[in-house]
Length: 476
Ligand code: BG6
Image 1 (tube, rainbow, N blue to C red):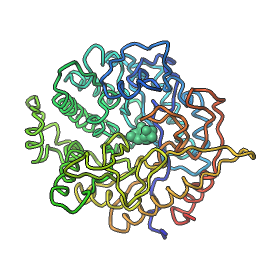
Image 2 (image 1 turned 90 degrees about the vertical axis):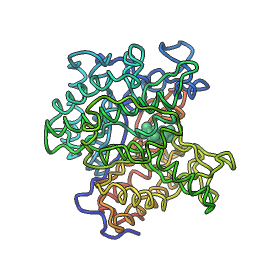
Image 3 (image 1 turned 135 degrees about the vertical axis):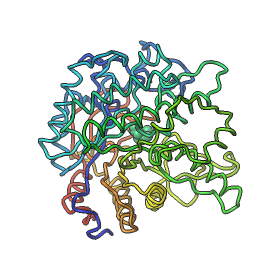
Image 4 (image 1 turned 45 degrees about the vertical axis):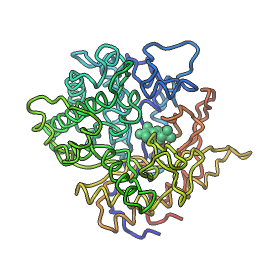
């Protein structure tokens, strides 16, 4: 178990995202975003993947983001609960369409700015540092319908205008910023990841990598603007992390795993090292992708991030034949089922040592401080007759992962902080369920959107409070 290895200024906390927590989807002048169009139920996956266009809401579908857990109205109560646990950092995202309801307006929506200013002030009041993602799986729908979202270069200007607004309006309140949540997920879930809807017969690989190029340019420009607005700003990229292990030591499997690693890390390589890596040329050749770049793009990409943030839920496994065994899709990334590790109720691998491996790999590669901004166990919780939630399984998962994180720090990896995912139960991104819970705080709401929304502390709430109070030393 860890002993005094977390630095005293280590940031401890939790994470939510606007689209999975806020609700209030048409309040305060907010425009519709991609996630508002993604239903719960049978059609969900096709819409998320960009295979089934959804440009208007349907009466016969339920959209979990519309009310989510009502953080929009209850944020004061929720921040107070975080403060009670001793959080020193809280990760959330700004809903782009609260500030720019359509996305292409010249001026921001004052009500959106007022909401986030009040939210960040509330954090500061409790001594909690906000860590803010500019784009967490929510593109304004108007930009999707009118411009085709990130396939269109015009998005760079819309995003950087929005980013500048955030840096200027929340200057002095927010210091830690992330540009795009899990930028690599765009390859696996193109509509929720980047607002991409495909046309019949279109070369999807070409569209995805071109869209990613636009995001990378936008991210580098936003990083530059953040530093211009305030040199103290710290900007990070964000990876859906988890190393690919070779399924066997067969050289073909090792090579397959290396290729998967590169596919996963390509965008972070650009954001953290300032240029496309050498292997990008062969990767693009193989996929038949020809990037359209503008003069000056290579210069823009040189504005690298200050730190590398990542989510870690599970490691992954690859072989030369990805259809050779059972597969799982933790975090929508296809993987072979690793026979050496257990899985969660949703089939996501549980591999704490994999976290240590991932952290060491990322630091070896980038030599920039890391920030673990998502980690946790999605599980079904039961409220017992006494009204308590005994989530020992979650405590066990977090204990082992925090311990592995401490091991990586001992290995010499600088880590700025830890924000466990879904610190208050929220809507699951993959399935739209409420029953896939991550929180220290239970929210009374079910998969059909029924419930009082009342908050209730789980057993893990008291455990995490103790972990934070002991600076990560007491994990018992
Ligand atoms: C990450 C996302 O992919 O994983 C979150 O950044 C998401 O938005 C989290 O919620 C866990 O996935 P899920 O599907 O269990 O909510």
